[in-house]
Image (cartoon, rainbow, N blue to C red; front, side):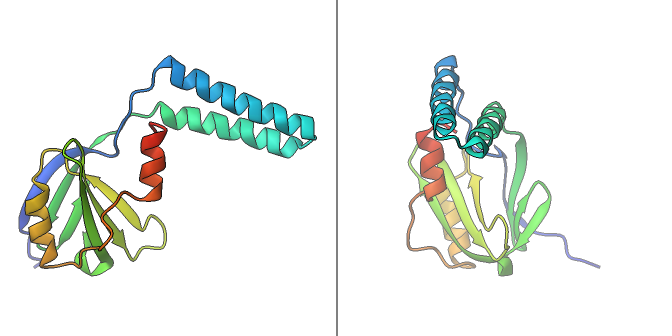
Length: 157
């Protein structure tokens, strides 16, 4: 009989950090994408123009998405995200970014796809989580947001 995991931390958090977008954000995106499409048409690059149209539609679609709230849990077996277990032996290292208004637990896994995960900590104590994980996993020496996180934050995506 399998042993039930001993839950150490458990909380609910959004899947990702959400930035509400006002009409000016969409207008700016439309103008930038429109200018890039016009430039591609002037160059005679129809494939590039069509690709930018598709890219604009995809960006607009994802910009409207709101995060679902998912259950997070750190147990003696690993990290659970919406019931899916990531065992500690599949996690290379972790690092926590705590800028006092926003806390994120980042983990790098051995998975081929989606190998870096950012887990919103919400109101959880980042120091307590770090103290627990440091005994199990190596802490990454660079504790800065990833390039993707910086770009997403900059463009409010």
